[in-house]
Image 1 (cartoon, helix red, strand yellow):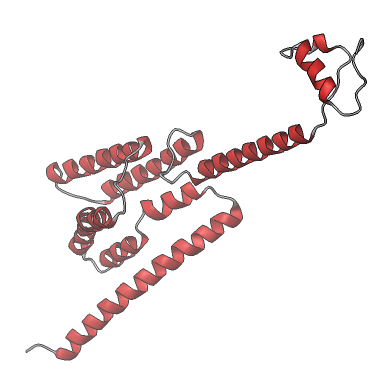
Image 2 (image 1 turned 180 degrees about the vertical axis):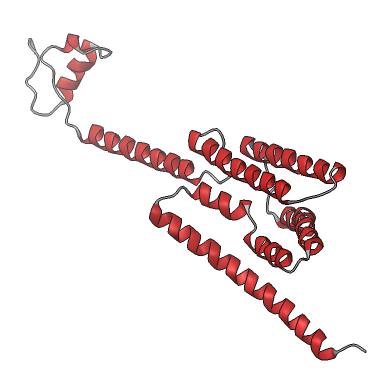
Length: 227
């Protein structure tokens, strides 16, 4: 006979655990970003650490291993990968306002992750036992991956995908400054009083006849010689 109290307790514990994990992950990301801002750590590294490691999944795996439920830990990891690719990524494509563009950095990230995933899949197919040695190798590989991506970002080889709003703002500011300078120059040029040169023939592009006509039409100018 099924004990309803036990079933209800397990369901409530499952829902509560999901809520706590979600809230803890959100708070972890928020306060990590604030700490990085105060320590002047590049946001790319913070995003890499928060997105490159699913800390709530790590908590579930550690709890499962502590209770000697290795199959549950492995199923949680594989199920999370499948749901992220087929579920979260597909929903993002459906509800995205525009098509996604994979730049050079995204292709590099994808190539590295595909290589690591393929190596782990081959090890699972041909290997018989996953023990402490395999765990140590995977942890070392993860550390090397984090350090290599951080070094690549620092050297400018790869950059995290983001919108280049700064350049657009700079271009808009430059255009507005250019227009303002042009308007100021036009205003000053219009308000500048005409300068009467003592040697009209030295003014390039203006004929002497035109300057003489200007002198005749100007008020208060002396009459020409011989008039």
